[in-house]
Length: 160
Image 1 (spheres, helix red, strand yellow):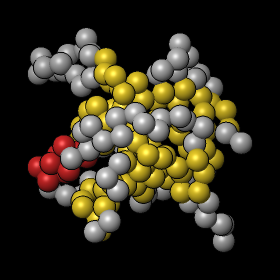
Image 2 (tube, one colour; image 1 turned 90 degrees about the vertical axis):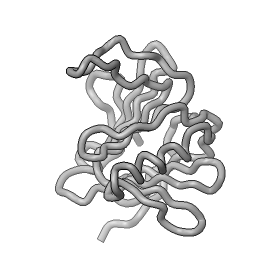
Image 3 (cartoon, rainbow, N blue to C red; image 1 turned 30 degrees about the vertical axis):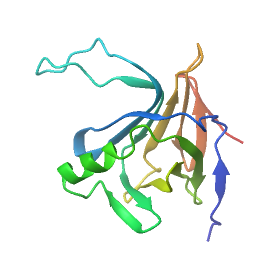
Image 4 (cartoon, helix red, strand yellow; image 1 turned 45 degrees about the horizontal axis):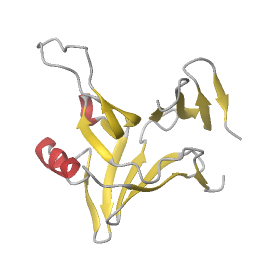
């Protein structure tokens, strides 16, 4: 059996605020941190796409929002309930971000004792990514073959 691990990502986002949060298809969660950039892309129905933050966290697999009192809800909540949960995150600052487990899942801590956790219940790698667009060369974090990876939009390098 592998050991569980907690790893702090080399991603200085503590203090950034949640600026926008939205659900995509199949309850995929998108968390936008920092200043927002509006999109010039239109959806098929003619409405504009969601804005993107300086840092974006995408949770494609399952996710849940926790508080001191327990689990508040997650991707299996009714869509209206999940959207209401996301509204509670807007304006909250990031306290910490870690990966947790032998196969790294995201654990995001926000002010007010809120915690957002990813967990992927299907075959393959943990299904999340983070885009850091604050520099000229964007950095992308994800998991490849069970290892935390960092890429700049090109070939992904293993994070040591």
